[in-house]
Picture 1 (cartoon, rainbow, N blue to C red):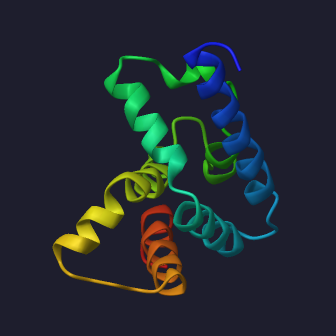
Picture 2: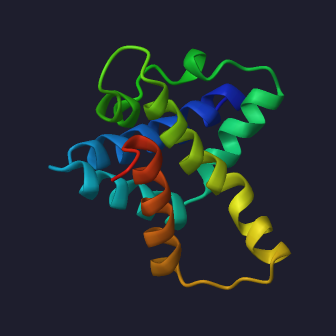
Length: 127
């Protein structure tokens, strides 16, 4: 494939394509459900992004578009959009270990519903 950066760029391109499909959902509630499904089904992106940050590689150097953040943001500088996405990516990295720490074994469907509820409460407080 080439260099390490080439491999990372390919993984991020795959993530961006999944994000574009999720961002095409017609409603915010469907969008949150789709993000939750993607996160629970494929935890590789969050782990990769965490590794990049720890290595000091700015994510924006290798990933030029952020379709889900664009869709979640209601205005420039919308911190709720960033927090919502951070929750999803953080779950990809820490979720399995945290569930093991409390001896929890939820199904994928239960995890998706809980993550969707958490993202909704951040993006739309009081909803």
